[in-house]
Length: 138
Image 1: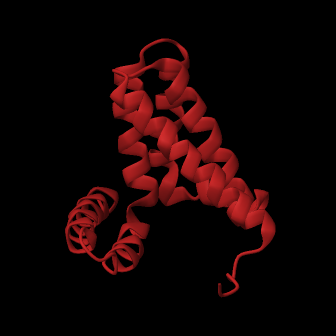
Image 2 (image 1 turned 120 degrees about the vertical axis):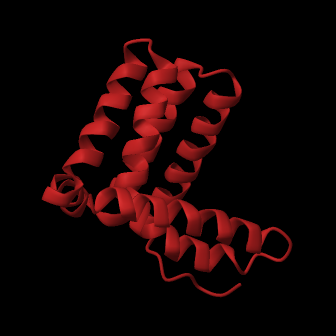
């Protein structure tokens, strides 16, 4: 197996982010289970911090053009913790689209190489990325 370009800490961060995504999907499938959504958020934030580092994570969320996304993401997490899971998740999803919409094109390029479902994933992410780019430019 070829050596990956990620450090050990970044590999652990990818595992945390993946677990966070799975918990978020599980929370949605369990009709917006508050505990699973909260655990998914915690794992995702820890994983992101491990992948890019504490300073870069704080700088990313504090950028002036990302304030709207950061506020929506934080408000969504707060609403989930205050037992308004559905509304919190919707607001948090908007924040994720604003914050990470620029990365959807890169993810689509990687996902397009997956044999059977790759082209469909790439098309969906391209549409999401285009929508997030137009919203963030307003």
